[in-house]
Image (cartoon, rainbow, N blue to C red; front, side, top):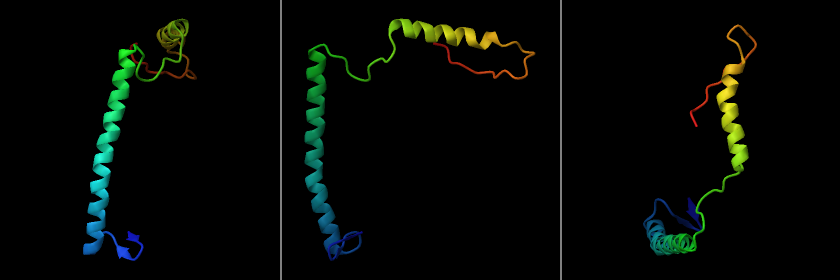
Length: 90
């Protein structure tokens, strides 16, 4: 990698530049991690949910579970055009 006129990865000056950049990045990474953790703790203390929201209503979840249970049994073994599917247990 060439940064300006300094060959960053191989020259002595380049290694110093990389070390300097890493020394500035490390505390910033630590600060970011602390802010994220503090935000998660604040959300949990307010009783908010952390993570992805469910996209289906309880009725929709029941319908999907019903389809998962019924679909493998609808096709007879003699039907050569049917596609067999493997489902995980809900």
